[in-house]
Length: 249
Image 1 (cartoon, rainbow, N blue to C red):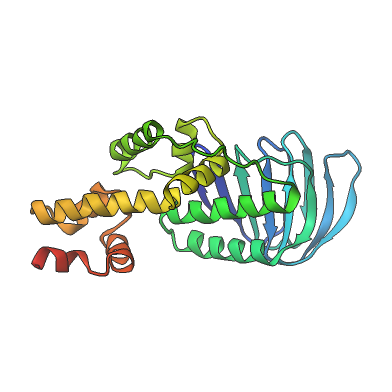
Image 2 (tube, helix red, strand yellow):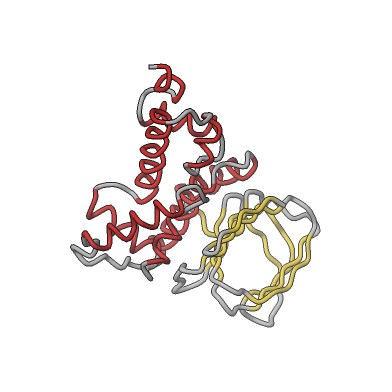
């Protein structure tokens, strides 16, 4: 099993293998079946029944539900548990092409041990897509991101830039759901919180490259990038030059 966990969400990629599980849903969760699966289950009820889940289908389960599921040949499965995911109604075996595309990109990132901030962007996209499919969204109040709140966000980023700082960390610090925070932040700044974090990383990295003799690998870690290669890819994509070109210039 491949997994990535933060204080706010947990992502699990379960292998294609026989299984028998029984648990109570601790936090609202989203499941995605990459393969067709058959077996027996009972979800939110004591009554067991046979099931056949289609490939590339979604399942949404609410906190407190009793879950029992058994399959002699289970397929590969993605499980996302979010603390601030609001579920108004559960469902299973639901097909949505956009959600499927997000789930398949998440699978690729988990298998390649990608940067947690990149994974979080897809985690939030999948959660928001499920929310879009269920009910209307909660729109942020215009002007909610005040200069004082933006300074608080900047201070938190500066303090934790060398860590695996995520958008969910920022929203939690402000006592907001991640979706509400992301929409309010974009309305106020024209940028996503994820892009803003990366811009702060790049700005700090550029300053260290131009003013110190620290190795590029050390600078990458100090600025929150997962590796020298990850920092280089972000510089090329967003600045148009490599870190080594900045130093040699």
